[in-house]
Length: 159
Image (cartoon, rainbow, N blue to C red; front, side):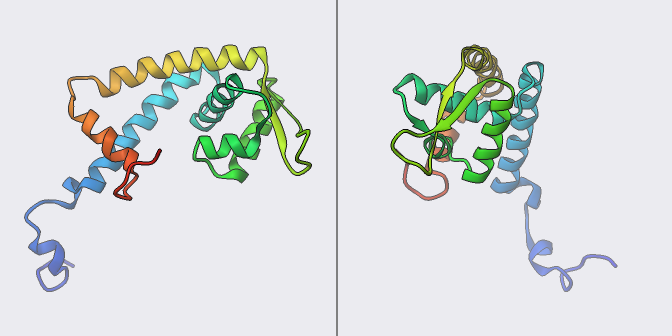
């Protein structure tokens, strides 16, 4: 069946292809970024989720002890269940330790091991270099995009 004005009037009336819509463009850029990030992290045997949570744990730990698993999830804007699963993987690899929290029986305290800290530093350097190549490749508009993304589609910047 051929698409006509009567079978798809909204699409037929559009001047511009839906592939040029802002959402489609953002999705394409996000997919390309994800591929670049995965490639950068592959030599370190880290997934993007593992990277995000390991560096969040290292960053929070460096600012004071007693970091809870929930603190890491909140800091990384990650799902708590996924955070727990990924942190278990990082623990098995010897990159973090998870222990009972001293003042909250329901919580787990997270500490980054020496190996985990060293890997987090290597990973952040790789990702910083990859980000610079990706976002600074003659595209000053990415600065404006970054400001918009921080608003998260809600119209107001998050703290």
